Image 1 (cartoon, rainbow, N blue to C red):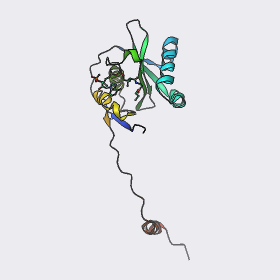
Image 2: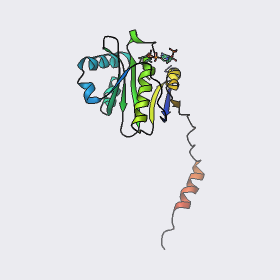
Image 3: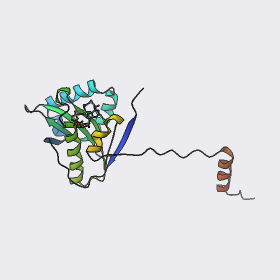
Image 4: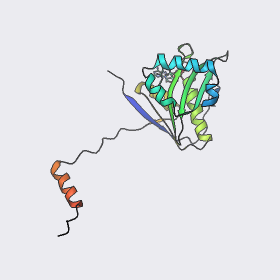
Length: 169
Ligand SMILES: CC(C)(COP(=O)(O)OP(=O)(O)OC[C@H]1O[C@@H](n2cnc3c(N)ncnc32)[C@H](O)[C@@H]1OP(=O)(O)O)[C@@H](O)C(=O)NCCC(=O)NCCS
């Protein structure tokens, strides 16, 4: 069965401590870094099953958060869509670099950048199992509310008819 997804919201109100140095760069600056672009594409196409979605998301990406290993090779990324509020997509860390708090640092640095730039809120969507990661960065899952039930046919008819004006005679 496919794992359920959660949607998260973060209203950044303070700067949080970031345990790894993160480069937070504009898309043109990121695109100029060819080795990093190749690594991102390799991870996007091997760690996710949604290359089509990646290409759709990419057209709106304004910033990329990048972690680099001790040799300055990029080994962790996330993408930021930034029309007004920000949306984080494609948080990914190379397998050999996982378990060191790099994803935590990428997301926390992004929330800090949003705070510094006066961004009202930041959203993201993830598998439910990653809830501890995003909650540790200050994100709160948006509670699913039951959608309003459609009115029974008769009541709907009454409701609509009460909105109708009589035709002029
Ligand atoms: C998910 C992913 C980004 C985590 O990267 P990471 O750098 O290893 O994560 P961190 O070391 O910062 O983890 C911080 C905390 O997040 C949680 N966490 C991290 N990976 C997790 C996982 N796979 N399942 C559940 N919780 C996880 C843990 O609470 C962890 O704290 P701990 O190490 O003290 O237990 C990485 O495993 C990855 O790239 N996976 C494939 C792509 C993916 O699924 N991305 C998420 C898209 S929403």
